[in-house]
Image (cartoon, rainbow, N blue to C red; front, side, top):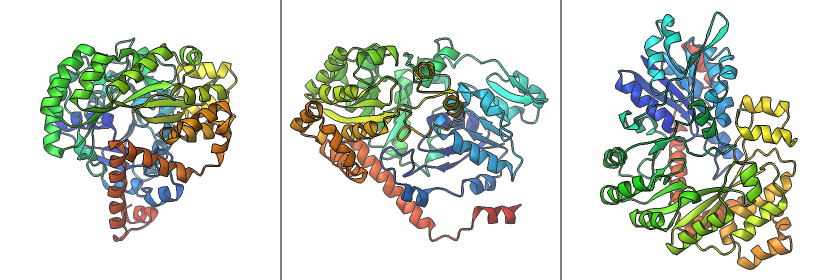
Length: 506
């Protein structure tokens, strides 16, 4: 049995875990990918012209040529439209079952399964549900026994019950990194998760919906030894130079961290970065992380307006806690990124100015990373935005259909000019002299940033990366260079338009 995953974007750990389970049980697995280089999904270098050059127009052709028995998609809400287009086109040429899984399918399974080009939907954690689906493809009478599965029967939608989450994450095989080897330079960077889920319930985050689906039992963590075993095997295989811990919050469990990091320092000993939360951060954690090779922590703050953070986003950390965390990082010379949201319901110019003022005195800020608020289906923030008149029924219909674009260019806030201005300011904030920062707040200098060319902002971001010796920028540059080489090599090969290939094959 051959399963072919179709994916848009960068590395996808969920697909890698599914692939490992399938391969361990005798399935053949392949990947067809469009990396989205220079696209609107690219938060570093969005360039429309280059996106057209690097767009993989042969995805449909490549899927067909793999001769699959099952085609699988695991899109985010922001990539659901791409997945739907590819699936619909493929169905026109080959009658192969198509399954959609992942977070968007979990949020609105009935909406996804209604499409004629979708045969199955997998809801929630589906490492073993997809295996049972593969094993049952020729025995349709068994479909109703597969937990997490949604399918059509006699023109009606059947939604099976949800199985409990995998209690022991150590029982899972390690992710199938080889599946993405053609598209990812693992020698630069190794992405790993030591846990699944999140203990928080932020209104804008899909993790809060998963907590609801699994009744608060979705958050689990792997053992320290299991994580080290994976890293040792993969380091021997790829000799990576950096590790990215992709957990929602890396250091929620201080005791686990105290066990893990000394082993990491001794056995792995490469720089790493992670995502953190100020509530769980203190001097003891900062010290051991710095000693073990952490070079940057990504703190999600979203806004420095405490009322909006508490009442709109359901985040209860105080500005004093945030200030203390940043001061601790400064003390230990530990760099940190700060995630900020543009377009939060209720946000005003004063809130954006508050960010400029709040960050004035900190020394080891690496970057202010800003994103537009993306509304995901079934998240609580939609109801809040609807009550405030920001979203209407049409907006919500578009959100459920994945017609929301991305995190970097979509803004439901009507004052787009202000949003664009502060996006530019945040991106180059570490380079702005303090006296200019003060003028931005006191004299409304922010208005002048509207005319700064976006190309200059990109160049200044690169300068920040060089100034702070941010290893992520080296990874980005290597990745673009790697894809440039691949693209130029492909120009020397004879290619035909996709429809011509279909005619020859079919």
